[in-house]
Amino acid sequence: MKELTPSTLLAVFTEMFGSGIFWAMVGLAAMITAAYLFVLIRDRKMSMRKFLIAQLSMPFGAIAAVVFVMLMTHSRPADIGGPIDVIVLLGVALAGAVGTAILVYTAQSLLRSAQTGH
Image (cartoon, helix red, strand yellow):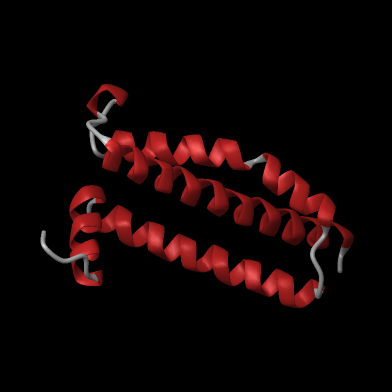
């Protein structure tokens, strides 16, 4: 792999996760992002209480993302071979943490408004 292009990344992710799981993750991420944008536009402000709870969920999302990737690639911590592996796993952890925070914030906003009837 001499160039890092979007088509190369698509091929790598499709090979790594399988076509079905990869596109399911893309679809799920798109739906959560759309719901998050809906909540932000609807509420016109961010709730700091919900934001704090979302931030507290971030370590769980980071760990879950790394475990998920390691399971999908049939890897274990002993397989981490060098600095690039650590950088990739830190990126996966960061993506999992941010994704979980967005999911938790959105879920809180949607569930709370459904309970109160607003």
